[in-house]
Length: 132
Image (tube, rainbow, N blue to C red; front, side):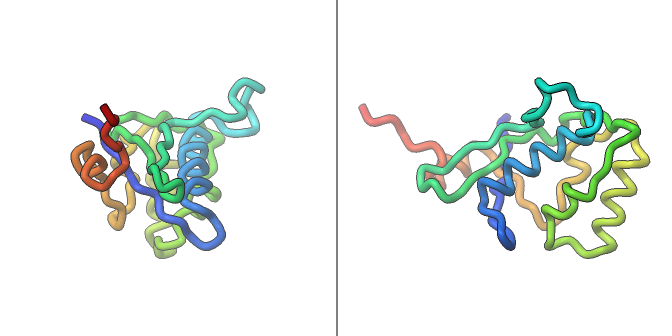
């Protein structure tokens, strides 16, 4: 079943910029920038979808998706994309990831984040019905 996280704008980042940055930084956990081949320069983990309003964006996620952790992974950029987290939450998130060889994505979703299902997204206009 499809799952979605609606990404809100934060500070100077739009919803689109933040969503694309989050999925890119998740990719960088498995393949840090320092070791990426040229074809990986725009690699991501999850897809980004756009609301018809052109303002809201969401990640299409799988909370059970396993993210391998590379020994050279860093999390500064990823945690900086969540200014709503306390310093303790940021530290705990970074410690959990960096002390794991792999982890399910759902284990690092902040408690303040809502995961939406397909029905919610349809009801809130993300997938308008096709005109017939």
